[in-house]
Length: 109
Image (cartoon, rainbow, N blue to C red; front, top):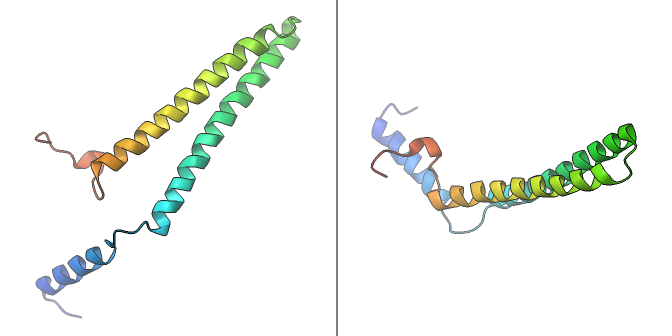
């Protein structure tokens, strides 16, 4: 093993440059699929919970489709808000650039 710190810095710089080919990596593509699945699951979960609650309240109070319709509309709104929020987080992350996280920002930025 080499104890020279400049050798270590050279190796680190070479490893960082290896990943910068301008191509979409499998990890980035998988992350995109993951975000799409997350958005779909959030939309379906919001709708499923709202429909369940609407049906349950309608059954308890014997009010035909009143609460089902109310909770269905609320579930759709919640699903859309969650998807918009997730998409906003995704675009904010891409505007920051690679290698920067929210904690890396300084007051001068």
